[in-house]
Image 1 (cartoon, rainbow, N blue to C red):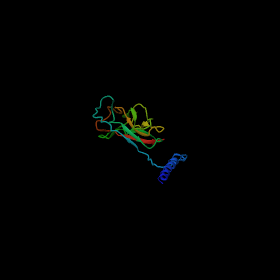
Image 2: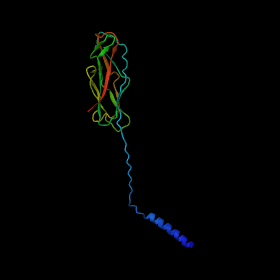
Image 3: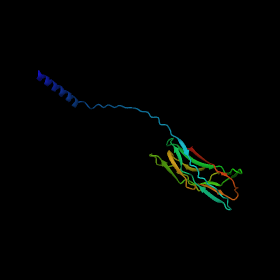
Image 4: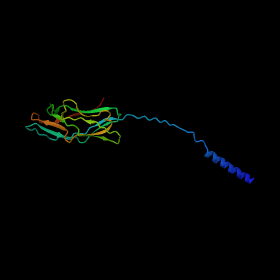
Length: 191
């Protein structure tokens, strides 16, 4: 009986291992998990840098141009998607003597950007373009500073002006007093 029991156990193990060893592996199990993600468009924003103070200027017998710069770079952020384009413009009202309520047109000007750099870690490589111009009058309409084309404006960018980017032409016809200069920056979507 003991021998029959031993043979039965050996036979049972043999059948078990044989079945596993010769199992049909031609079947394939595929399971698909579907996950939905809602990706929302990001921000479209402009951060400007303050203009350095011009300090005290003395009127002289000749026209004299005084120049100054910004305290840091400007930041353009466009996280709306690759197919959106933008442009950055600036304009100004005429230079105004607030003491005597006088305006002096065509005395404010700006130089073009010196560089644009992409910020962040991304596979996007193209940059918006710096609009090249000679010094341009600010109170004669919008001055185009930079623009993106063909989706080059997607991401975040640092826009740097030269050290002396804003210019005031002071002439003997100006009157003594406190003057005010207002720059109007406009970041807008373009086709």
